[in-house]
Length: 120
Image (cartoon, rainbow, N blue to C red):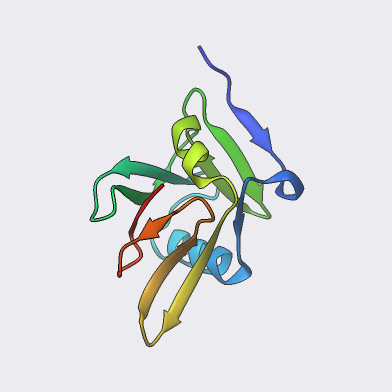
C-alpha cells in the first residue's frame, strides 16, 4: 500500500490563486461540504487535445495521493495526474470569456479553445 504524501504550500507542485481558493471555499459552503474534505484535481484521457482536467470533492485522500494544503483548502492529487500537473496554477475567471476554473499548465504543449483539455 502506498502512503499519502503531504506537501506544504511553500513546496507545492500545484498553486492556487487567492481568487480560486475563495471560489473553492464558496462552493464548499454553498453545498455544505465539510472543511475536512479536499478538492481532487486530476487528469484523464479525452478531450480534443488528448487529456482533460478533472475537479471534484473527496472525503479523504486515496493511497498514493499527494495532499497539498493552501491555507484552509486541501488538494488531493494522484501520482499520475501530478506528473502532468506539476507547476500548474489553478485560477478562477469570471470575465467575458466565461466563468470557471482555469489551469495554467506549463507542461501543456497544446490546448483546446475552451481550455478544458491539453496535450503534452
